Length: 559
Image (cartoon, rainbow, N blue to C red; front, side, top):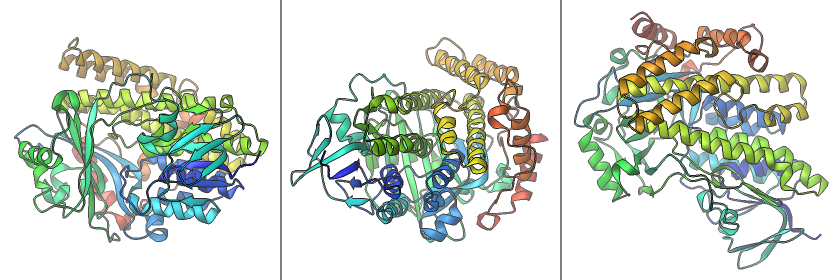
């Protein structure tokens, strides 16, 4: 069979270029083709602990250290540039009531142990594109695919200027996926619960939380919310504020701003600037962030944000990343899900190219994961929008997500530790493919997934008017008590609104819990009892980390 390339990757965003770098590094003749060009505007900027360890896994497995540089803000600054990243020390959630100032006791914070990054995607995506080219991939930009044909022994991409014959196609082009359109893969997809729309842009001169709303001494948080991924929430929606200018080494003045609204609550999209100004009128504390702000680009509007697919694979193609589906980015799970998708697809595709055997059955586990992760994120986010009805309801609900996230990241760190110790590629693939709950928060905990299903069912009953808010809050608290031994942190004290710490002591606590986790879970999480070493990047932080943790202990643990 005569082909021009082994694999064509449609889309030169972060998923396509990372996979392209891996394939090219390992001898696959790889084409990355895109209708646009770089550098370019993109969102999906917030890293989470799962995404960092997944980048470390990919870098080690495929011997490309450069893949992992975006896992840390300091390596991003050193290798990509001082404009490439803001710092993320926590998730911050601040609830607002219409026409009222923000109450400081209506704020939740989920500090992460070691800092993550806010990716300035214009820089980071261009970096990964250059990495793929350096590994040997061929890059075609400003080349639009007009038609796709599936033949018995090849796929043919028609651009209008030439036909490109390839053995396999990975579509990483997002919502407008040519493969999804050609084969009708959006038709018949499972109906989604989340019904939101979005508008987003970049701004300069945005005033960050401690200057706009209240100093850290007033909130008692363990880190500055200006160094968090900040969610300004209200009934029916939320606004992200993701700064790139929030640490001493940054030379980037911009913030990413995105507004998500429930379509059933707010109706279809209107003029974006008018909607934004209405938001500032309705919520005076949110408005304080934008008293001196200026947009540096037009609003991008997504009238319907959420979508999925009925299938992700064929004999000679698969959908990757946001080509497969997308859910409102409330919990920043998109990048981690993309990196996990690459970890699942890459070894199978390398084997298929080597054997010249392309069969959808070999990718079934990836499809099962990909469909499940969209469904999980959909249910999580839909119930979170329900939780926006009031701060007490949100404060009770969001703890279910935190618990699952911690168990999941502990599992990923165990997988990475095992691989570093053994170097066994096959064992690594099995550990990922044989996940008990692929695409779900905990990956491996029967007890957590049981609790999470009960919590979701409870929130869904409340939305249908079958349960009262006070009853839902009390029942959630009872669930956290019932499953206390199965969760890494005690979530029953709803007055504790700063639920973790960026400290060695907290890291040691999680390690001890993983070592003793019940119901056989310790086998999946245990990394021993020796203290793990973390780089807290104190030079990048505002304030004294240890002193702020003690302040939070005094406010939230000794209240």
